Length: 344
Image (cartoon, rainbow, N blue to C red; front, side):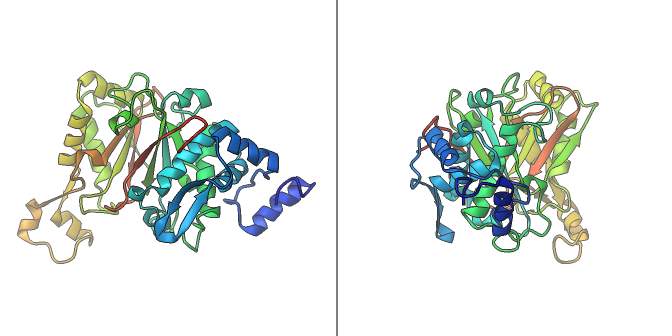
């Protein structure tokens, strides 16, 4: 049903609610012209396959992406980012069914890199996770609507979240690549500096980390390690991923120290840990506490690449953030190159 068939947009909006095609917020009713504009901006045919979720026997085609992008409020030029993100969701390494359907209720976080950030005005600075920027809000929302309307990931059905996550409405931001301690995220994950890319990451939660006094990496990074390895962490096995987003003042501490990305990751691997006794006292591990448990460590990470380091947010303020991963060895963040006008 499109605006071509119904004259009163309000009635059409209500009809979309009645059909269960919204995320709870009003949507933009699509027309044949607006859908065609989306497809043209992506250089796509309506019947073109964007991706598939083999475990669910479901295929995502371009016209479904275009329709949901219109509904989300995207401009046509945003479509290449949406398409790349959907390809990331459908990549086997992302293992869509787990993070999309579990009781953990993860948000699908989209991190955008490259020249497309400036071209589209995607926010990487103040309030990067928050409201006020159309591309951030609508690109992330389009992906969630695709999940609901093309992949049937609906609350209470294939989405079994116990509490959910506000980021499930939309969670899209750009990396602040200027004045960065290291190479940008997409370069660290194997793409060229001139590429534009989106990284799709399943995050269970968001925890802001505050430290106003740290002038060296060690005390600052201890705060991140503690935040990542709390007693309620979803996964204690040592094979999950986590995302750290460094805002301006904390990024400055690491840049001026000369610490490499790998040195930061290694420090966090060493310090994001708890004793077996800690976990047993919190009933996160079975059995009574034994003497050896007091000095036996469980580390949250095994591999440096499991700690994703990103720079975003305001240049002032002693805040950064930890976004623990969905917490399963079968789900990995995926980085997809964004093709201008074509994503094949």
